[in-house]
Length: 303
Image (cartoon, rainbow, N blue to C red; front, side):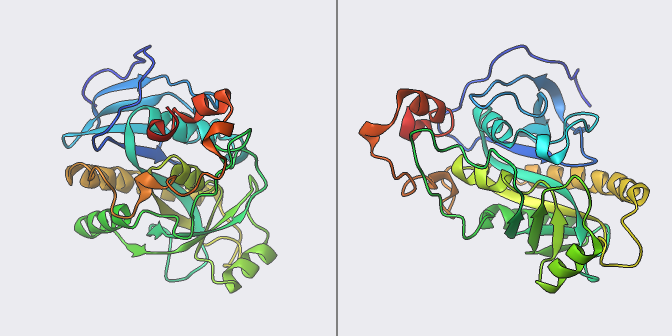
């Protein structure tokens, strides 16, 4: 890494306009981005509290990057302890316009063995955790979520994976479970029979919140095991070994995407205008506190 990774001690401001930074959410096994130049760990406060950790801001391939370890450095947060709203709000506050999230997952498919990258395009939610939306408390919104991933960003990631020669599949359904325990064998067989492709614990509510924050978002699932439907049980030691291998590939993937240049100012898939037809509450009924809070996510609407 070039430059010292130390806290700046400054509060970031939202960037208005422009293509913005590339946000990276690192999952299990990906707690740092060693290739970032001039990297600075930056504290961020949001109306929804502090994110999982300070955010590492730097440059990669000429593009500004904001990297957030989802579980905190050292993996100190369980899936249900992750402050997903604060994480997404912090990346938006740092000027990110698109986010690549990396997640460790189990596979329900023999054709998706450990080491495979899956570009997730659909989710099935089996979580019960709180913090699923930025809205409520006086402002109601129903954001379209039929296609959870940004197709433009997913295509860019697919190109990068092909260039790097990494095994991958474009498109897949993630079953998001509550955790922190792994699945029972019965659960694993059931979800496999229901045509799920991979299973993880953190894809939601993260993807939902990214859409509400009008961010282009895609989840890259790194397969570490075959889950409990396969022979034997999930071996944590083996999962950690595969995570170590996948982490290097994930960092190479981020570098390749960054080298492709900045995102367009307007996403052709409409991600950065997701709230245009979503807000139900009349403007004159918005409470001041809710308006101020939501202005940190969508200043063009609430500021």
